[in-house]
Length: 503
Ligand code: MLC
Ligand code: AMP
Image (tube, rainbow, N blue to C red; front, side):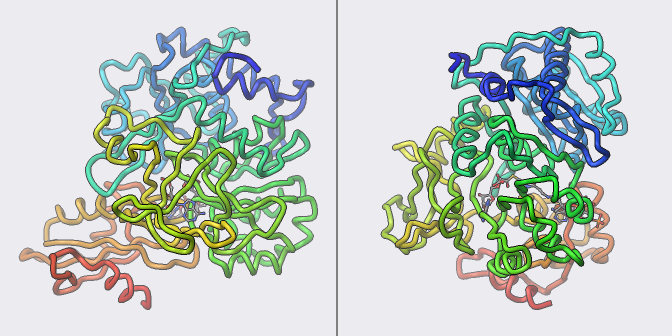
């Protein structure tokens, strides 16, 4: 083991002896070998360093998934730069805060997004580069002449490797600092728990601006010298065609319901598959059962979050129990507590807390928020409600935080309510999630009209589309005379959820 805690060093130790081995193959049949990924990430590391980025500096990236983007992530790791990815759906109003708060040394966007991002880039930023889905742009031009040799920068276990933002029920989004050792320890744990080896091939269809695709998917591959079929996005037809070349797939529940809706998908597509993993949102028991009947494969459900990486998992060997997220992973402690922090007995529902080497050290430049979310004995309060049964299986049964998960993406109603409350003709609003066959949950806005003439549902939706990332835009808008409230004056969202779930 090297003493350098840089995550890239841990990956490099696990690269195949023959660097001509494929790291990935795209849907078009192009390949990237481990050696090519190493050389290209070295060029990018050298290029960003020459532009003035120093270890610890942030690199903010809002680009489509591409092979060069993967090399950019690896280049940042090896140069000790903090990788800060952004969902490509974010609009200008959402981006402004991230750029100002992360204070990046380098910003990378695609050519089409440059005009939007340029005015938002802080004065302290040293360079704004472009990277397009086909790999072209100024990053490629500027790094082409950089050396393919690079010594991996020394990092300690506490040094930050990545910064990912999560919104919240109150206030501005919080930057989640993830260290090299948070990511390395979780990757090592998952490689063992899920039996990854160099002979595996992962079907990688997830985006790489969130934990699931970036750290869980890529991490398991790079930490075991395995390979991937690398798809730009999830498309059921393409996935069904690619599955026979793969051994493992990871996805959000929507991927599995979409596969089940795909006519003709069945056992024959899964003959080489040894493992299907689901997470980021609850997998319905019906989906688990239908998938097993159709393919003979029991989906392995696991549970995690950006702040912690993966915490629990159903077993590789043993019963994968539908409706549960399995057992705590080795080295990770979980407990279920009351609001006042007393540990609850088996079978009782309460707040889920976790502690372990996977758990982030805190929120970026927000010590008071960090203090709020950690207990005195170092457990992190996840905001999820859970119970642990007599066999040790953990079930996520609800959320203490007001959050909607749609297609595996988190949406905080507060953010949409603030926008709606500010809309002329709207007096107040409540945003809820209702069951949706494709996305798991769908965003629904319930409005009370103001004294001015109220906007139509279509006008409300198009207003949201201008201001918010598309996945946050309400799928339905309803007007009511008044919002149901409890004796304390708090909106009873459960009443609204029941009322509109039936629609
Ligand atoms: C797209 N749309 C969505 C949506 N994604 N609506 C609600 N929820 C979503 N997630 C809408 C768009 O607004 C658009 O609407 C229409 O669908 C088509 O857009 P698209 O981009 O073509 O959609 P599609 O490619 O089908 O994408 C859907 C998806 C994608 C489910 C494949 O969202 C996805 O890959 N999700 C995975 C997200 C993920 O990686 N989560 C992990 C987070 S990490 P219109 O009206 O404009 O047509 C985490 C921690 C952990 O949670 O434990 O893993
Ligand atoms: P994120 O903030 O994007 O990292 O999302 C993390 C949240 O996703 C968790 O706090 C949970 O609420 C939810 N989540 C992740 N995996 C699961 C799962 N298997 N079942 C239920 N909820 C999940």
